[in-house]
Image (cartoon, rainbow, N blue to C red):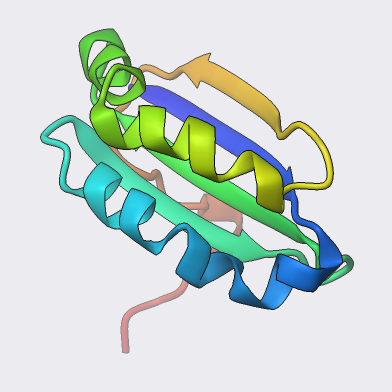
Length: 109
C-alpha cells in the first residue's frame, strides 16, 4: 500500500473550521475504491497544525486519487487557508492494513 502522512499548517483564523473546509474533499477521497483510510487529527501541541494519515491500495489507486476531480479542486481551494506548504512523508509499505502494536498488547476481557 501507499502510506502517506502529511502535516498541514492552517492559518490561525481558519484552524477551528478546518474540518469543515476539508469535509467534501475528505468524503470524496474516502469514497475512492482504492482508498484504505483518510483520517485527520489535530496536533496537541499546535492548534494550527492538522495531520492527515492516508493510505491507498497501490500505485494505481494513488495515481487515481491525484488525478481525481476532487483532488484538483482541493489544489485550488485549500491553499488560501494554509500558512505554509504542507509537509509529507510518502512510502510504499508491504501490507494492506494496520498492524497490532505488540509492545502495548491489550488482553481481551
